[in-house]
Image 1: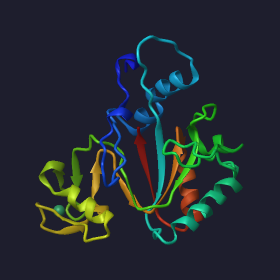
Image 2 (image 1 turned 135 degrees about the vertical axis):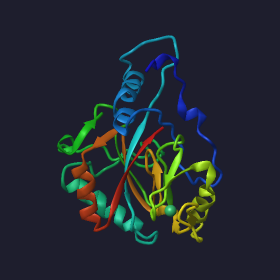
Image 3 (image 1 turned 90 degrees about the vertical axis):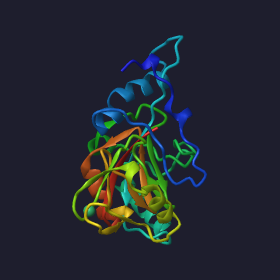
Length: 238
Ligand SMILES: [Zn+2]
């Protein structure tokens, strides 16, 4: 990856008036490669002044989301605090946030003293590293280059442009009937039950966004235990 020749994906983000989707750009072999591999080099180079160049350097920020798949919108704020409390008690996150310090502008809770033990990679020497909380109806979208979607009934993969999937996403956001019909088996299923390929999405009212922080699977499981709900990990590359 030639950092100097790439452009900032953030500036090219689609402006979705409904704010349905966290558009991102992924063009790599795996979430780990995309998020905490080479892109972190670009991020660190830019933010830490480790590298000096007259050419523009990509700013690659990444968020590893743990999404609560079962929290209601009503319960989400209290559950967000419950999850945060669990992270603080384990020494994973600090209890006092940097106000507005997250990538989204939300408060950012910096890594705690035991964060590294729960992480595969953590850029805790960077200012833009910590966990933010989202407690609103959100489509956690991992990549604008998703090309296919898989039917939960028969397992058939469909090209995205052959199904009206975006309408189903909009209906989910407005809490309407969000079912999508498979053209192979003729069964319908809610959009939340379909699998986006290659990087899956999540739909929910509560998310813990680990900014520039590749968490260990144990951390996601721990959060799920604290919340008492099923969770899904979604990788977002900004
Ligand atoms: Zn099907």
